[in-house]
Amino acid sequence: MKILFLTTHLNFGGISSYTVSLARQLKDMGDCPIVASSGGDLVSLLEKDKIKHFYVPLNTKSELNPKIWVAVFRLISLIKQEGIDIIHAQTRVSQITAVLVSKLTGVPFVSTCHGFFKQNLGRRIIPGWGKAVIAISEAVREHLANDFGVSKKKICLIHNGVEVEKFKMDKPLQQIKDFKHKAHIDNTSSVIGIIARLSSVKGHCFLLKAASIIVQSNTRVKFLIIGDGPEKKHLLQLVKKLNIEKYVIFLKPVMDTSIALKTFDIFVMPSVQEGLGIAILEAMASGLPVIASNVGGIYTLIKDGSNGFLLPPENASAISEAICKLLKEPDLARRMGKEGQRIAQDKFSLVEMANQTRALYAEVLDEKQKKF
Image (cartoon, rainbow, N blue to C red; front, side, top):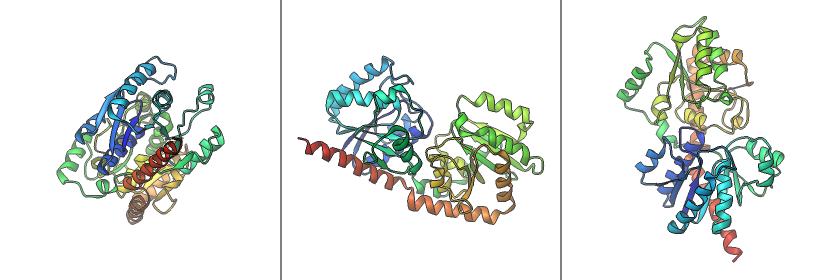
């Protein structure tokens, strides 16, 4: 099967990770994926696996940007040249592009809904979900049905998945030492961390406020924030205002999160909004206890008191209490980490996600054949 993945860019982030991971897994299964985007950090991972990346100028948030038409005509040529069977769009701009390309080539497309959207005129005029839309969590599925009127028959629930073994396996000690050296982390400090884009919806500010509470009684901690984004300046200012500079470390995004996660003791995701959370899944697969907000689809991953703590959103006090409990009870932290790892392996593997996605592709293509 020849699949064209269409997305805005491949810079660090959940959608890019999803696109690249799924493409790589489908290639391993014998399919022929091609990814089209405006490029970015993760293109090198595709090249490493000899997956073609095709540049199209989709680095825009506007559905009316003329770049879309440039992309459409380039993609029409690519589809004819490569004999593409199906298109899989990941973002709003790539959905609009897929609508146009599909109409002009007859190649069907599906999309993935990675989170929650505001209703607007554009979505009412051109919904852009495709022949089928993948919801990454139950909460997202309900959002599509209730807020956008998408037929439940058209929505396919396929949870995100991760390469569990990659995160589960031990890493060379030297790599871990090198990472700790880079992050200026000593072996006497407990590491509480988050890997996420520095965006307001990820709730980093609540973790920082929790940190300011914790360090009043425990100075043997480091708070590691890995990511980049529009909130960085604001977060740096907040760290200074809270007077916690010596406890907080900011690092740019890393290509291999499995090594970074091996330096963590606790993973925190204080999101205000979240579709499901690939970063949470990676932390679970790494055997870490997870503290997360009870928003969006996170409840699908975190069972409160079992593999972590599920807390009310925007509550720094609750975050600090949960962190302190895990630091004081290392046996509890280990049990939660092991349970999270088991859940990730049993229910959220990349292989299972790829198998379900392939089945959806086959169903859509079968429907197309029946019409002829």
